[in-house]
Length: 287
Image (cartoon, rainbow, N blue to C red; front, side):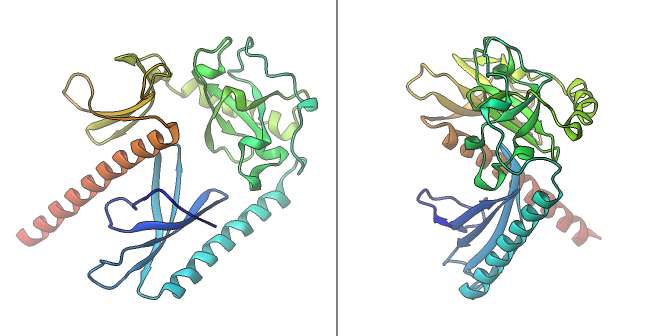
């Protein structure tokens, strides 16, 4: 468990994250709001999501810090148990896949539609094992031969979870694909064929290539990248019916840009939810 140096708020609740640990498919957090009018100063929450899309749930608030810490430990323990169960059920090596088990990651080769291994160092410690390294590549500028961008979009074969890696994080195509992974190829090929191409890979705005996008209601939030710009990353928004993007936030760090895009999308999602609740309340009053 590590203390978060950058201020991180849980949506617009007023709670600031103080501690967080990412274990398995979830991030478990403790947050604090000493100005809470009801005296519920402490919160335990869990965050799950893919890239910029995610949500907070399993939220508990209390005035008792130790009670919240108990719930935090319970959540972490539950995640550890789930990972242990996954390892016990895995039909593949528990040790990491090595470079000797793969063909070299040749940038001159298109890996779209291939099963590849991700470098163990690119995964969190609990996932540095053979079954968790195997992914099926669906698309991405970084998946192409002689890539001009880095994004490699894929699915983890062991659990079907979506993921995004950089091309340099790919160890290579696996020489001997285990049977349980081969049996999944038809399924993932079908997903790839049904998936729409990623227009964000080729859309350019003011020298920035749009690499990520999230639609929330009538508002589209995007992330642009331009490695030659003083601020290589920017997040914008665009409302339906308008031309172009506006309200740009320019940043120098990609992780901070991803977090900014996530925050903007989550704030809009919270606003839409609040508006829906308000309308439902007004309707109930009329009745």
